[in-house]
Image (cartoon, rainbow over all chains, first blue to last red; front, top):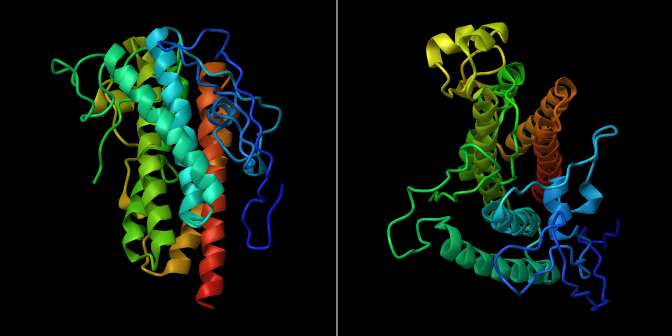
Length: 159
Length: 186
């Protein structure tokens, strides 16, 4: 892994991305036709893509330490609500992990650009989730009061 | 301020109850090296951090750990769902059942209840960050012990995730420790 003399990740200047339409676990992405690519390689910074980051529990390949021969499992989603939620969980996870890095490296504008891109997509996915399945936070507004209803994360099933 | 997001950090898919594993996994809710101890440790220490880096990192990891506490409790709850009294007794959970039924209460794998004595906030930046590094290593080791005890992929997957988070947190605390050690030339 590549660090400059200040201990920051080395910037990779190549700008090309593959915007291929992609699937999660063989299932089409829920709800929208935008097909945001959760397997898009992050070129400007050495990061796992959104799906792998959540799967491994780590957005930063240089910090990833497997345990013995255990391989992380593929991410589970058993219905359209769970699939939509999984997309948000992937984005939230990379935002969380990137944020910890940014807490210590606030001047890394490449990392923050990735953060901004993820945050924008996460907001969009949350609005869509709210429309289809109900609020994730109190400030997600629906026509009728729905906050207390629906599946709470600790209830039966994948969450 | 704390707000709530109606989602777990990682998608759980627990299909089979397992009371023995529930009894072990609750260690990471109410135990000495668990998520509740971690969250309260960093929450308490954040007030004494000397600059933005320390304030932000402690605050943000404390927040993340609270979500992990919820995830661990959820695993325990799911693993105990629909347990019969007989299954509870056979798993050695009758003591827990006496005090808590099939509810959730912060204890360790042996039913010892949570205490603030599990963590420190000494008001000294290097001491506090050293404590944090040790805490993350211990939590990692406990998750490895739990992974060894488990044989269900639905249980191992989230444990691997939580273990990896401890490794990342350790690294961030280490970076901050070295930065402060340098800056304040202790």
